[in-house]
Amino acid sequence: MAETLFAELAQLGERLERTTKRGELAALLAGFLKSLPSAEAPAAVRLIIGRIFPEWDSRTLNVSGQAVMAVIEELVDASPTLRDEIYGQAADTGEAVRVLLERAPRQPLASPPITLVEVFEALGQIAETEGRGSRTRKMVLLRGLFSRASAVEAKFLVKIIFGEMRHGVDEGILLDGIAQAAGVKPRVVQRANQVWGDLGKVALTALTAGEAELTTATVSLFQPIKPMLAQTAEDPAAAFGEHGGRVAVEYKLDGARVQIHARGQQVRIYSRQLSDVTDSLPDVVAEVREKLTAAEAILEGEVVAVSAEGRPLPFQHLMRRFRRKHEIEEAIVEIPVRLHLFDALYVDARSLIDAPNTERWAVLEQVAGSLGMVRRLIPGSLEEFLAFAQAAVEDGHEGVMIKDLDSAYTPGVRGKAWLKLKHAISVDLVVVAADWGYGRRHGWLSNYHLAARDSVTGQYMVVGKTFKGLTDTEFREMTERLLALEQSRRGSTVFVLPQVVVEVLFNEIQASSQYPSGLSLRFARVSRIRDDKPPVEAESLQNLRRLFDQQFERKGRLT
Image 1 (tube, rainbow, N blue to C red):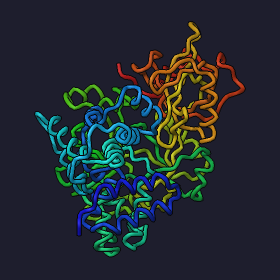
Image 2 (cartoon, helix red, strand yellow):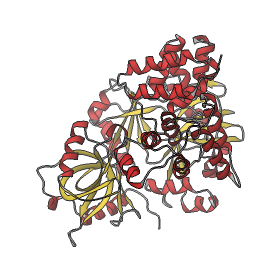
Image 3 (cartoon, rainbow, N blue to C red):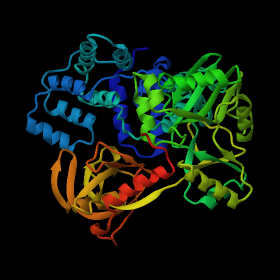
Image 4 (cartoon, rainbow, N blue to C red):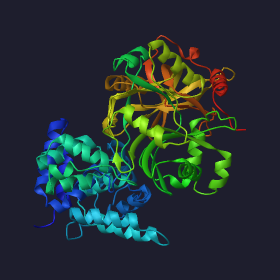
């Protein structure tokens, strides 16, 4: 059977972009996968989703946008005016490249046409290219692809390389398509992907071995699985009563979620995104080696940066630790961390993900030894629950997690078995600029620059940005409103008169070198538009600074 041309995948991408219904998207995917030789399925599904490697694989393409666009510039003959026109109208870079190649090609396509497998293998080679001269070798590989690509093929090459597919197909829809193509139950495909974290392996197994083989999927040491996710709760009483009061409540820590894989002295630590962060946490590795009582285990927990007094530090300090590549020993002293375990997924050759929460916690208590565990309570009443939640805030943490005692561990699934109840702060801020959106928000001003008023100078000082909180209708209405207040533009940013006030919820105020105000709001989202409030009555910068200082009555502070 002849190899599939990449043009077929690109045409599929075009059809997906014109389709909005989930069932129709899955059907298109299923039809495409059934048309392929089964050996091409792993490459196809990874290219469709724009993710070349399994989620737990740390390799990246490491190709800059500048390098890709340099190759495109060699293939087009467009004036600066035409370029500006195309980029101003295109929904994203991939679409802009397609239009450029259609309207101003410099030379005819090289031959032969590229195949799906060629693209996949070339991108793999780019990821493996390292060391001296690697940029030159990567450019050669990129030229080899783009010189043989049609305009629409080039569009999807760019989208894949940039990780910006935006065709409406998320992982769940792709899994539904795999299930349809293979004739197996969607839940079996989803389950296999949850524990394997490898869409290519799932697709190949489903299409060649079927449901029987998929059902054997289980967790494996040193192959991280997707974390179970929680829904957000707004009402404490409703959250407590969600599972008839049969819940455990745990501190929601303001740290980094980690998954620890251990076998004897071999310990690896993975982040929430399944990246290997072992080298950033040698102190945690040493602690696990010393204190874990199980021969082998996969445990979940949170790593929190702490002050000399043991109080939690703001999250940004922990990120400084994670980003450190060198002088790790100095970082351990400068930013000590504390491990708090909260789940056991695998212990001594036994998978626990199907066991209820109570059983997993009991196993965790048995094997954790003297390792730290998250503070946890099974409350007997709403009053006891509320007191525990208040204690979490007073101890400097984000809030609490509410967990169904009977729930299994569902990797990668966000459901009501886990609820998160965060302590949120509300302030009224002024929109002083906004960025044009992309993808689904193309054509809307949807990323708002939020400012507080300096009560001394009268200036509005930016303290954060957010694109979260509004409905599509509100985005459209806000775009019209802000354009009517436009003062100037720079790139994709529109600067406006400071007249629109919004109520903003956030979880923490951080010190910032990015903004002249010196402050930045963490997890900011708009809760409502305050048409009842004039800009001069919005939050003052001075009061935000007072709130910033007050945080350290509960949190630690680096000296």
